[in-house]
Length: 100
Image 1 (spheres, rainbow, N blue to C red):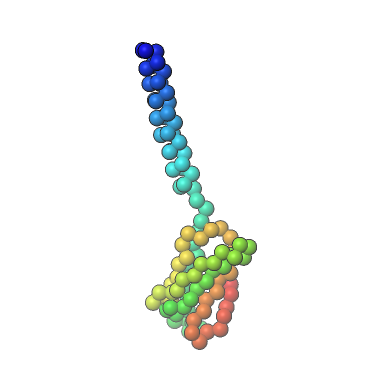
Image 2: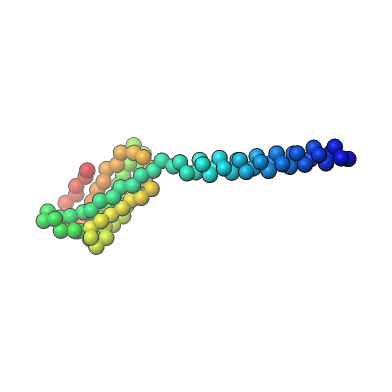
């Protein structure tokens, strides 16, 4: 009976250590995500900010698309973007289309 308790106790300690070390590995893996952001400001030909312009970023190989609008200062931000090569299109009323 004493030997059975000792083996069971060692097994429980082992399982506890394995779960603690396993959760440490998972948290390290989650912290290493590959992502970036696209930010900028939209201005017209005179240099004035363009509020409420529609900004669309489209990844060239996967066609992943994300869009946003500029704020009152013409600034936009597209956070947490997957790595890739993006075409950014900005449209606003009375504008022609431009890609970069």
